[in-house]
Image (cartoon, rainbow, N blue to C red; front, side):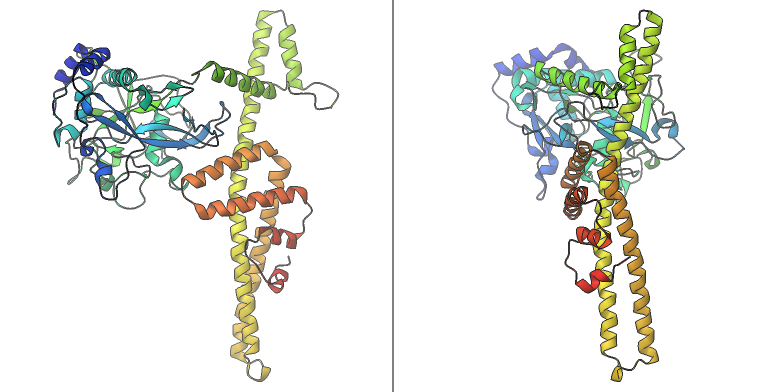
Length: 550
């Protein structure tokens, strides 16, 4: 392993501009072999990384694109996700909590998704050496070993040095935001955990699980402290199976340093005290029980005996490509306009509803403006903030309700079609038995068979009626209680999720239900058979249709 002291000396002696000028004077170095920079792409069936950024000395770093479905055209839109784990044992650290996420980049066409980039592998010793200006020929396997022994301050410096080198040598290779290149930094905890769990490409029922995999063992996907696995040694990156997004070693090998400080979890929210540094993912020194997607570990940032930065033997990093939020005057203007529109709606300063008197929150805004006493004005402003937050929370809840209702409606469409097939099957079975009775006379055996099928038919009809009642309730909730814009946003985000996770069957049913919503909004008095016709995606006979009368 390259000694950390040598690497740090090189980092101190060679600033990023110095590295850039030294490389400019020398002949362009040969690119490193793919086995060092993106080993997964070397496999016969392997796919290359989504983004490859150059590094000094001919090295490179591979990144994966992480989609975050939101209304990308609305700069204030973000995605509410639930992180953590619903277990009490380490609940003070990693209990369930809401988080909000949005990617800094989006396609030029806009649309319903944003994205960020996260390194496909942990930083390797070879990459750290190249960033320190050591351009000795690359060597396997040493230069593919994950880099440990870092402090949080080293990690921040590495991100800074890499960004500076890219700005000086290859700014056009970075993802752009409003014409300006992005930059490298450590990931936030929400970015790391969302990506580690599989993001938008995994089934929503898998996302909250303890681990991202549904088959195999932890040792198949990570290097931890167990026989035949990491067992207290740092290994080359990319040796184990990837997660659903194509990320390697999110479990084990080296602990990955996070951007923000540690905070306790207070029954579903982060505590107000900021603490030490955070690592995620565990390492080859971690027992298997300690390694799972929600696990968070805190360390003091300084060595108490020396006062110097704490460097853990297994402290490593995985970089993220991000961008400024207010990256241009045009974006600032769009953010300001959207915020004022949202604040106006939250504060009730929207146009008069025709009730003959202003909205109560609009009257509150007028009182604040007219109040001369600073203390009372401050108290009124605090009340205004509470009311705005309450209204914003209500709007967020409506969007979540629309999202859930669309999912439920699609499920009812699928269930109604499946049950209609069952009704038709049982009905035809009864007719077949009646046609095959000897001499048209019922006997005991035939009658038992007919009674059995008749019972199944009745059960299916009752179940279908229940589905149709629930289907109507879902349609009524979407059309009567949720406005069209909210419905549209929820549909667009849900549709994008199903596209990204390749759930084409569910997508087709969702799009059918979306058409049903539009039809029902125009014909809210549709009777039960009309609802059945609306929900059916398969043809059914008139007899089967009539058999579904409730």
